[in-house]
Length: 238
Image (cartoon, rainbow, N blue to C red; front, side):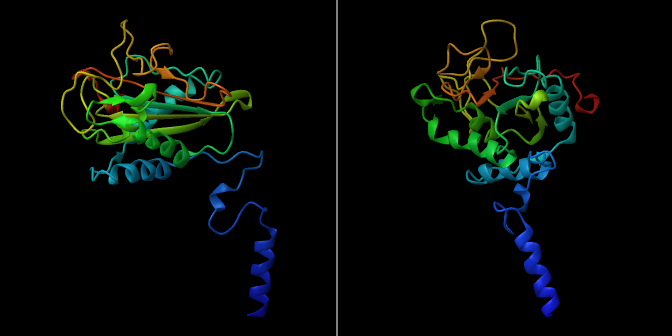
């Protein structure tokens, strides 16, 4: 028994200073960066937010995750210039963070914290703020999600992409139902599938900069017309 206790003590003392038994997931990899987020982390973070509204839990969809991963892979050379996948029939939340502390739980929580910016009575983001990532997460008709966490090239941070089916942020509709005269994400002025977030008319289409001062993380979401998904589109073909 003494030998086992001594060995356990040595193992604990050998852990990095910032780690303990409850934070082993924070241990860094061999090049000093945190490991990529897992599907269970993305899903649990989404459903924690939905549970606060007594909404049905989302299911993880591998086809959506593959769709998200394929788009992320095309953006690795220019992660922080967020661009949405063109003509996507799915809802999409994007996040780029320069620093290594970002993971699925923190990113989804950041999106969920936008609840304080959303007015459900008028269906708008308050005081020129952003709330479209939150409303996509809690959109009551959305059933499944698939996400990816990618390391950007040249050590330029982390890119997170989440795809949602059916999509949320339907123009002039609210996440919990109803039609409104105001919109969380307004329709684009061109044929592009992305949209300018309400409260951010000067942002690039579909993208809103969250930190205008230091620019070390930015986030974007999309809006959709009703019945966007074409009947011929099949997730199994992604």
